[in-house]
Each structure stands twice: as structure tokens, then as C-alpha cells.
Image (tube, rainbow, N blue to C red; front, side, top):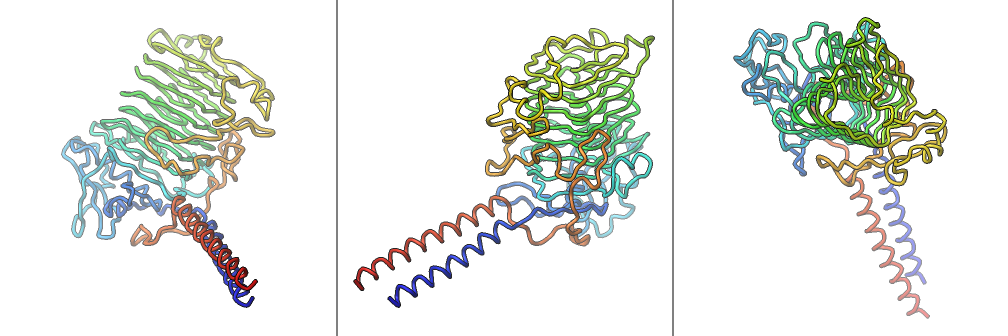
Length: 520
């Protein structure tokens, strides 16, 4: 009997240790990092992880990506990046083309003690964001008049006069948030503005599993919160843009992509909430302008947002010149308004899908299935071409369980989720395009479709984008030496603990049974 008692005591001890280990493994929390305005490419110099992907672990790492892509065209204005021994960026290596467009503030005055590395389009490569990033703290609604600490340099598309670097790879946010994005310049040398200035230098790019919130972007050129301009094709999957303002004093502004040019674009499983798009012309929620390209928007929604400007304004697209439109399973709660007067009726146009002004600004073909809206559309010329292809509804009809009946064709089993007292959100959005980790939890939006601490009203007001500053980076290294376990590592750790526990349970119980039998 003593032996049995000893075995049971050992069993209790093992269970206690394993249970503690399982609790410890499951207690890992996501961290945030606040940008200090500098950039680092140490992550690039160190190379890829075991899976062959680059990991961005700090805000400075994300800023370093902008430098590498900005110098990715060998015939461009910049041909490489100067860095110090610890990987911090000292500036661009100047090229010989269009030197009058080069930004002298980004070129070091002395190269002593510096090393240079060529730029990179990241073609065939994957970049993983492993941390929430706060580019600026504070309320973006105030930044129109009072600038925050840091102005963002877009990732690609950052110079005029030719030689535009662009991102060709896969950027996977892994469900993380980038908040505090700020850019304001009325006479900018930067052609394309956004988190990504330009994508698709030579080949299509992919951006997935990312949240952007609490932003203010103002440009004299093309601007999109996610991407300024897509050049050779782009897939955007599982991206949320919320609570901010984007505007231009010239043309082409959007909550997602400023201009679609040179290749097809697919926007899938995406959300736009509490965003104001405003300016002069070519303004839209999903893209400001499409030039002879295919655009697909599927299983996505717009909520508490607005588009306002002078001419050619649409909920989906501001202006389209050729190309094909495919819209499937989309709903919108938004206000769309063109401010042009009656005398400007031929050019002042507004519509639910796109603002049209003449035969040259229409799609070649269109396929729209399941486009529901609670929208007001006003302007001197209202584009009614799609009236029979869109379905106006009352807000109550798409709120709570009523949405399952109203939004016919929407998959509420595996894609959409009805929310009590609110409009539906995306339930399951696997990154089928451009890779992504199949084991990751892609459902990173809370039930209300916005970040947990955000104001989802249309004013764009937030505190700090719903992220917290849990510790700034060491500016000397800009790359922590120790990494938190990934989601997969945590799963593996739990599986190992559970498996070992199960094995020990079986062994000990079997032993106890045998010994009990012997004693009897």
C-alpha cells in the first residue's frame, strides 16, 4: 500500500508541474512597440528565420523596410542603404538619376564608419510583423493642425522623377496593429503615399492579416492608407482600416489603395470603419482610381465612413477608366457626397460603385452580386447605372440575426458572423493568397469589427489606436536578442506538455494497478 501511495503522490506532483507549465505557456501576451523615429535593418542583415521569412520585431524594423524598398530600383534615385555596425540606418546611397529629386536629409553627409547594402523589392520573400507598432501616440484627429512626433516614410514609391522602388513580396501582419500613421506634405517629392507607397515593382505583391488605425494622411499626390499605388498586381486579404482621415489636394485618395495601375487587384475579407476620405477628385473607399485593370472586392464591408470631394467620387471607386469590376458579398454603411455645382455637372459625378463622367470613365465589364448598402449619395450628377445591381436596406435589416436573412448569399457558416445589436463581421478569413501560416488564428477582429478600445464613429477619433506601449526598444541595437514564442511554438509547447502528462498518467496508473493486484 505504501508503494501505491508513493505512486499517487508522484502523480500529483507531475500533474502540478505540468499544469503550471501549461498555464505559463498559455499566458504569453502580445507586446507593443513605440517608434523613436529611427530605422534599423539589423533584421535584414541577420537573415531569415527557420521558415525562411524576415521578422520585424520593432517599430524601427518596420521603418527599415521602407529604406530597403525605397532603394530597390538600381536605376532609381537611391541605390542602397547606409547603416552603422549595429544595423541602424544612416541614410540612402544616392544614385545618379534625377539628383534634383533626391531628399538631402536622407543622405548622410559623411560615410565614415558606415556600410552600405543594396535595396530589395523582396520578390519571392515573406516579411512578418511580430509586434503591434505605435508610430505616433495621441489622437490622429488633431494632427491636421498639430503634427505628432514622427512623419512616416512610405514603404516604396518614395521619390518622384522616375526610379520608384516598390514592394514585390508578401507582408504578413499576423494580426498585429500599426497605429499612429502620419504623413502631411502639400508639395511632396513622394509620389505615392501610404503605409506602403507602392507595391509591384515587377511582380504582384500580397499584404495580409493586418490592422491600421488612428491615422492622418494628407498628400499633394496619390494617397491610400494601406497602399498609395499598386503597379503590377496586388492581393489584400484580411486587412482592417479604421478610425482616421485620408485626403489629397490634387487627386486619388482612398482608405485602402490610392490608384490601381498595371495589374489586377483583389481585396478580400477586409473592413473599413470610421474613415473619412476627402479631397478634390478621384476619391473612394476601396480605391481612388482604377486604370484599365481588374478589381475584385469580396466578403468585405464599409461602416460609419464617408467620402466627400468635388468630382468623380464613389463608395467603391472614385474614377475607373476601363478594366473589369467584380463585387461579391459586400455591405456598406456610408455617406458619399460630390460637392461640384450644376454648371460642372459633366465632371462632378458621384455613385455607389464609382463616380462616372463620360464614356471614357467606365468599366469594360462588371459583375456585382450581393452589394447591400445603407448609404446616402448626393451630388449634381448621381451615377444610377448600378441601381438595379445594388440593394438598399435599412440598418435594422442587417443588424443582429436579421442580417442572416437580409444578406442573401453571405456565408454565415464559415465567413460571416452576426453580432447582436450590430452589423456583421468577418468570422473566418484564411489567407489563401500569398501564403500565411495555416495554424494562425486569422480571426483577429473583435466581435464589433473594430479594435477593442476604439471609437468606431466616423469622426476618426481614437486615443492611441487601441495599442499599448509595453516597452520601447533599445536604440543602440534596435533588435531584441530574445524573442517571445510564436503562436506555433506555444501550441507545440502545450502539445508536448499535454502529451508527456498523458504518457505519465497511463504509466503510473498501470503501475498502481499491477502493484495493487500483487498485494491482493
